[in-house]
Image 1: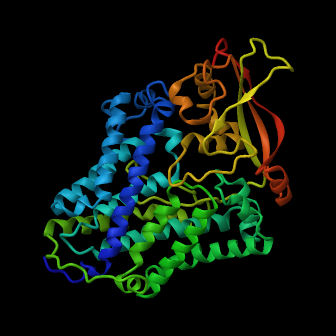
Image 2: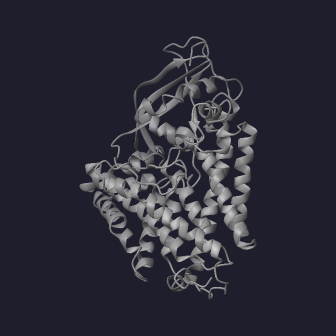
Image 3: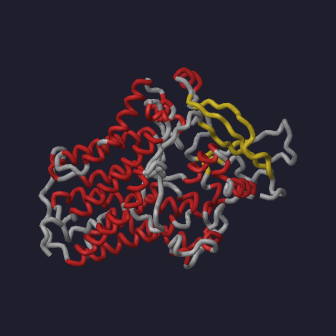
Length: 479
């Protein structure tokens, strides 16, 4: 079916980057789910899936796990999703017929939707919806049997627009430090999971912090509109998005949020822009798109236009939600990040002891986490795009116990039991032979050290005890 308006052959390299990149994020997401689920949502997890599906109907949270759940089945779904994603990363979608490639992407989306819809608090982040939405659009890019559809590329730009513009709006409407340009005097220190360069970003001169914030406002409130401009303006806008997102990648750990945003920006980069950087061969000749594929892309476009009513209303409304899905399939969502910035960093530190009757002289040993701050002399690690779900929720728990009311005490119980799956989520277990008799949690204020403290004492962090977060508990108490 020959439709000049439908095909965008100049974006075939962009399609390769988009599809293989999104498939790589799927691969990371499925591997992360397989490695962490038993302690979080498994049959004996802190928030078990069987308990959820007994209370929530299929129509509210469609998932294959509504039909059947076992830890073995969940692991099988995750590893199957990882294998399919790996095949797409390797270019498997280009060696099968168009219909098979489309079906493969659809299966990948359905499997990860099944995980997200039973993931509860552990999967409540905006980048889960972003991956699902981007994954469906990747399906609509086709494969080497057809030219990239122009409509799909526009849908991807619309998704990128919602990510960036939504984040810009929530900042301007939220914390006043975004308006007086002072937010980044705090953010690098108080963000959920600092990275190895965050200490250095925090110690940049204050005027440069203000330049960072101002540049962020331009990148999120002005540049997104240029994504819909003719070339080469659209490619320039995409380049600005990529550069600003790489700045965020360098300064912190935000799972795959920044990497997916970078990938989506390539939907606005054509072959002419690529040719200014690398040698780009001519696009391979392809036959006209089949009628059924054109119909699927058109139907998806119409559906997106209809469903866009809710995110547009959210962005224009006075009470903008930061991240929200308006349907159980996570289609056409609204996005945003960091509408408010903490001025003080709090950390919950878990400790255990073998003492049968704790007293003021009891020696308490700290548990260490893989990503979140704890050890004062350990440099923050780089984990993104891999997502450490327990570490992230511990940051929320430190802000307010309400974020942890349904999983924190079960976490303490599993540490008292020496639960293997739970201990695998941690970076350091001070009780490798037998579990402790008592567990407690204490709340600290953390701050980055000064240049002098880092040089003389080799400490990245300093901390001050605030008080008890969870009083000492043992298995003899109800949890």
